[in-house]
Image (cartoon, rainbow, N blue to C red; front, side, top):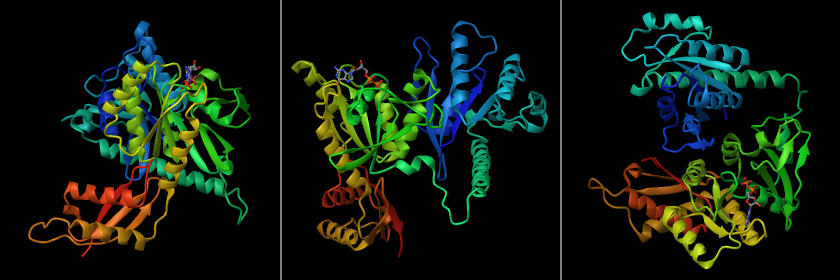
Length: 451
Ligand code: GDP
C-alpha cells in the first residue's frame, strides 16, 4: 500500500486535503507529549487502489521550540512515505519556508509532487508560473477547501504509481528463467492463520506476542527490510499453523534500532490489511481511549475478522472489573460480531480461549459456500418473510452466490433488489449469519439487479 506524506508550511491546507483524501472522521495519531500537531494517519482509496496518507503540522522555515518539534514530525513522515505531496499556497506566493522544504526534498530524493493549493477562482496560467522556480516540476493546482482538482490529482498520481509497478514487474521478470515462478521472499514462510496483534503502545502487545511464541528474548533477524515492514513469524500451536505479523517489534532487524522498530502506525495499518484475523488489544487498567476506537474503526473498515482482548485483567479488584465491563458494553454495543476476552498476557490466563475465537473467526472468514446452498438459504429466508411490495410490485430474489472471502461477500441477485429497505436487508444478513454459523468476521452483502 503506497504511503503519501503531506508536507508544507503551516496553514497551506494540509489538514483540509487530508480530510478530502481520507473521507473519514478517523485518524490514528502518533503522539509526542506536549505537541498539539502530531502526525496523523488515515486511509484512502481510488477505485481498487488503497493508500495511506500522513498529515503533519508543517515546516515553517524558522524552526525553534514547538516549531522544530513539528518540523521533526514532518521529516519523519517524509522518511516513512513513498510519495510526498508538497503543498504551497497560491495566494502567498513562494516563501523562504517553501524554499527550505524544496531543498530538503531534493536532497532526500523522494518522489515529490508540488501541489498548488487555494487556486480558487484564479487563472492557473497566470498564478502558477512562479512556482516552477522551486525546481519541483509542474505545480498541480487544487482548491482543497472547495474540493476542486482533487480527484484529478489522485488519478494522476495513482496512474503514475500503477505505471511504475508495471515497469518494475517487467524489469524484475526479466531476471527470471522461463517457467520459473517469481516468489516473494516473505510469502515463502506464510502458513496457516495470519494473525495481527494490534493496539496502541503499552497495552501489552509484545507481552502477548511473546506469550504466543513462548520465549522472552528479542531475536535479531538478518533479513532485508525497513522500519516500515513487519517481520512474519511462523509457529505452531496444538497442531495448527499460524503466522504472526509482528507489529509489536518483538523481533528486530539488524541495523534498525529498537525504538524505531517499536510502534509504527504504518506497520499496524499494513498488518490489518494483510492478516486473516486481527487481535485488538485493549488495556483494562486505562480503559478505552479515543485511539483504541480509531484503531477499531480501521479494522472494521478493512473487513478483517476480529477478536478483542482486554488485557491486564490480573490483579484488578471486583469493582474495577465491573467498571471496565460496563464501559465496554456501553462503547462497543455496536460491535456485534466480535468475541471479547478478558486476559492476562503476563500470566497467560484466557489465552486458550482467545485462540478458540481466532480459529473460529478464521474459519468463518475463509469459508467457501456453494451457490445452491446459499440460494436455498435465500429461498427459506424469503419463504419465512417476504420482501415488502414496492411501487405495486414485489421484488424477486432469485439466487445468491459468494463473491469472495476475508471478509465473506454474499451477492444476492434479483429484481428491484436495489430498492430493498434497510430492515429487510438486515433480516437477510442475520439469517445468513445464523444459518451459516458465522462468527468473528463481518459479512459484506451486495445486491445485483437482474430481470
Ligand atoms: P506494547 O507496547 O503493547 O507491546 O506493551 P508491552 O507488552 O511492552 O507491555 C507494556 C507494559 O505492560 C509492560 O510493563 C508489561 O509488563 C505490562 N503488561 C503487559 N501485559 C500485562 C498483563 O497482562 N498484566 C499486567 N499486570 N501487566 C502487563
